[in-house]
Image (cartoon, rainbow, N blue to C red; front, side):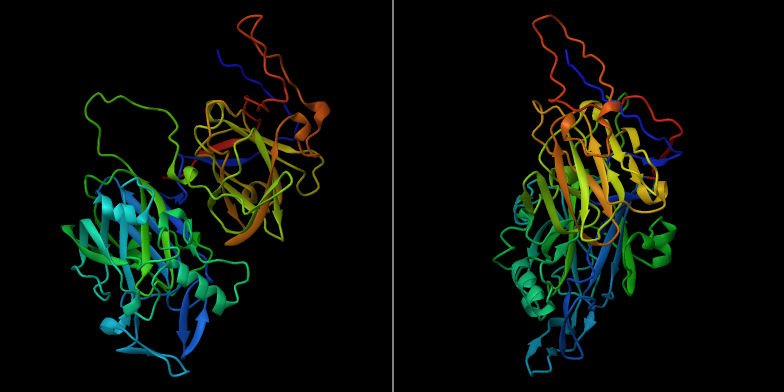
Length: 483
């Protein structure tokens, strides 16, 4: 028999608005599209012969991917400064210091889009497994295949033929040196540039960025911004918009089901991005066995770890917004921003961590309120918009739930939306009731007795598990997040 604890907190209740849907991955699910956001400062290029980092013609701001279950089409939208034909350079790209680089095909364009369904957790291993797929959507790059969708692809590196870099390690080092980025690193959308997924290309080797060979299995249709928006794509979801909003669609291969990592690199490796998403399985056979369980997603499993531990605080410095953030597994956490960053949203809650996958969020006084606000019975797929609730982003909140430490090694991660594309914050674990922040009034806590099976089975001490209110909060409105 499982034992549970509940914690009641006397709070102010408001007419609040939440969103709910099936749990998303590291990419954020919005209007049926998975979005990944890439920072605006991490491209390297030349402007009038001078080296520039950030905002160049190679800058990517994000990518979105949608599966249309009715038509069977996969839609891809790109938010970038790079036009379809790329940066037309001619045979050479020259700097003002007289240094010139040969450019194959007279332009530097986007590479091919790779879809990894291998489950290996590694870019190179996915190619080796034969479960990497590729899509060539622009006829202006140096891919070794025609425009189309390909299975069982091999990768080919063209960075050295496009005034670019060999791998992500050399790209990140050069961008930081020339761009005076300080502590900021380049990002790859949903992944850090040095995520183990990209090994060994975080330090060595020629990183594949176009298709070398493969079995052609489909056609590609280019799409205008208007067509993308008519299909539900929302350009305003990003922090910034590039000068080229473009995309394409193609028929979904039958074997494309479940989690995937989509990676798009420039031919020069001067920017790139990865998106962690998921496609639905094919229609079930008659009388299927329905699983209503909460699926642990790839985004949770690849949540960002803290950069530093200072006493009880786990600190994240200069991290990209809209990611899953990963403190060690514990009952609950206090989240506090650093250096002016603010929390705009909680985008998703984790599966497989808390009893019944239920959480509570405690927010201290906002706009002069004298009591805290508690949001209860939150589940994976729920979205909490602090700006919508309180009229402004917030700097502090506490998240709690009944964590089954004996049966999980996964962290209590949350997917958060910050008020800027890069921000910093810290997280402090709550081990027991005494560890609650000062804004939670301990005398008002209600802790009902915990039932036990027999006299020999002792109920856990209140210091072991921190519970949550299981009753719904008054005046709270719940709406479904549009899929």
